[in-house]
Amino acid sequence: MTNEEQNVTEEELLTVEEMVYGAHDKVDALIELLIEKNVFTEEEYAEKLQQILAEYDDGEEADEEDSE
Image 1 (cartoon, rainbow, N blue to C red):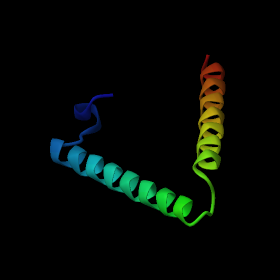
Image 2 (cartoon, rainbow, N blue to C red; image 1 turned 45 degrees about the vertical axis):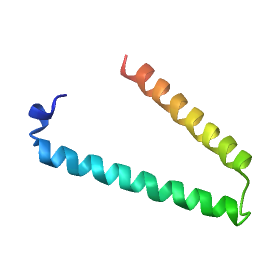
Image 3 (tube, rainbow, N blue to C red; image 1 turned 30 degrees about the vertical axis):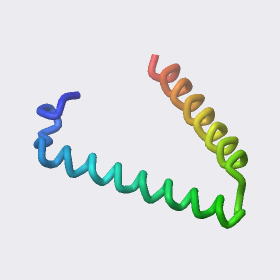
């Protein structure tokens, strides 16, 4: 779906993009702080992230199969 089909202006698109990048930076900062404070290790974080991404991918595949 194109921006025109969604009736999204270029200015609105940039605003959403800026919000996404800003949120991403904040999450990165929180993760770094939690690792520095030894709440969890970088390895534990990486393992959990991979687990979540795999679950997300599995869910998308199931959704694709359901739509066929």
